[in-house]
Image (cartoon, rainbow, N blue to C red; front, side, top):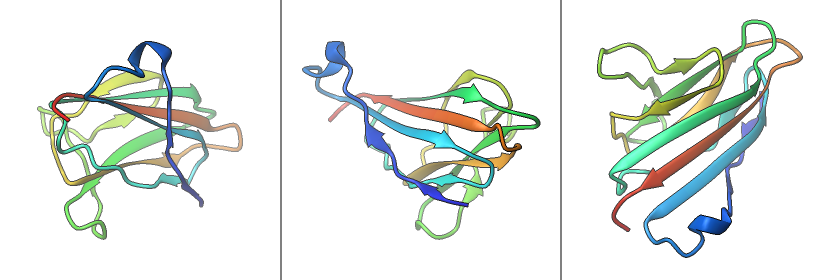
Length: 121
């Protein structure tokens, strides 16, 4: 397991746009977790998951209000927020910290997780 550090993602069209934050966790393998980010000040938060899921690859999104206890984030239907294929996920819960974690996969699993948040700055 490794902790994957998020990196800023400079998008030419968004560089001068205030109120946009984009962070990327790259090459996430089975057992990896992303270092947390804070998105509470943004109105809209979307996560993009892409890459090679390998066999059984699953990404879960977790939230925490204390940075220590991590719980599965849930959608509006109270289902855990996960991805087993490339997709966009709109976050409806607003914990202080959010992180991605790869909970399953094989040696081929290599996921890129991109968080985009838009709103007041």
